[in-house]
Image 1 (tube, rainbow, N blue to C red):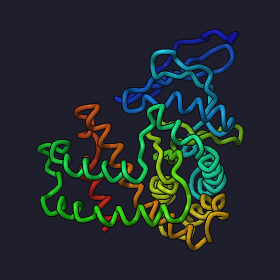
Image 2 (spheres, rainbow, N blue to C red; image 1 turned 90 degrees about the vertical axis):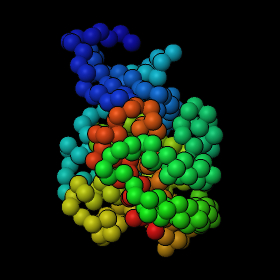
Image 3 (cartoon, one colour; image 1 turned 120 degrees about the vertical axis):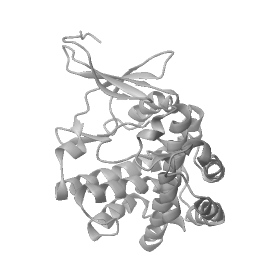
Length: 302
């Protein structure tokens, strides 16, 4: 590559599931990301996206031949550190249609994306995962005082037919399952010289694309002090839906988006479950623990 390390390497991100090293070089800073078992698909997935959609994800400079590690170019500062308030909402209105177009264009590669280890959260696997997390919540929560009550567990089990029906309604819109970031918020978009890229694909899965909205709309609302159903946040939803307008009417797309926003919390719970199982003790650092994620499912789907 013709560049040399120019200063000490700095560890800038440390989590049980990944760590990131910043490497100052004679050609500018580059970053090494080393992924744990729950995110081992991320380097190969990011490289695939960089090849297919250059400029929308960080530039991947190299992949380790044996380990889930990647070397990426500098992407800029986090969106939430650059913009706030109305400017943050404006940035989301710009990036969300690009994200949706990526999802449309990569649909044909969905099976390939699953084959490299990306979680499969399509209809049947999502339902099976829901059954598993509800059944195993007592094991994951242990003796925490905020674990699910027996009444809450029964209520979650009663939601299973409703979740299955919602997935069928969502599928009937005719939009195929595809890549879904599953953690798309203001700290997972980078800004540099006015250009925005989506990074941190470690929680990505293959599912209905509209499940993306579960995280994005909630975080955008929280960051700007708006309600999730406020006009300012619903404008973001509509911006995301714009590339899908040839597939259904806008009222139909909006109804599907609302289903996707609600079902998306199930996918987030499956991610949290995988993390809890892979890294013992990590769940204790989450406010509300694992049960809290399932309570959010209950609130959204009942």
